[in-house]
Amino acid sequence: MSDIRYPVGKFSRPEAVTREDLDGWINELDRLPENLRQAAQTLSEQQLDTPYRPAGWTVRQVVHHLADSHMNSYARFRLALTEDEPIIKPYDEAAWANLGDAKAAPIASSLDLLSAMHSRWVLLLRSLSEEQWRRTFRHPENGVVSLNTSAALYAWHSRHHVAHITELRRREGW
Image 1: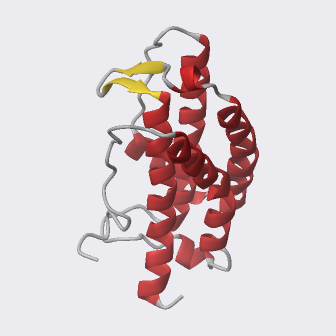
Image 2 (image 1 turned 180 degrees about the vertical axis):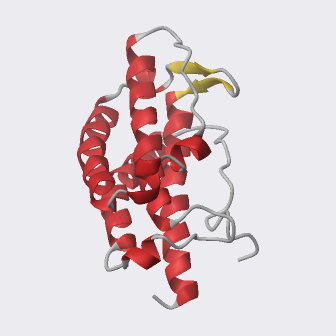
């Protein structure tokens, strides 16, 4: 692996999206809570406070980041489904990851949050029509984003951060 920042490669925006693509991404989102729980299980407090790469976030921060990020995405989906191209509010992920709770809270709270939220999110995603998948929101920095592109991004995001933890475990022999 040449760049431990991107253990599953960088995100690539899909050119076209099929129903099979959507089903695969939904399934990945459905599996995230369990995949993350398995990746982090049995880690000691010291291991949870180990950065996954030099100058990177700790495993604890990665777990809390996933909850923060996916909470924001879930809200963005709901906004896009109920408003015409809403302008969403970005947030400073690094600043959030450096707040006291992200640096010190037990990961169980974020694992439980992800389980509950993904249960709702996946139910919502499986209910969407083709037309609803094409709905959009406007990101102030990234422009117009369709829900199908956002699903691809968050499926990748799930794999990306779980791999940060599993690759750290592999490298450290944990």
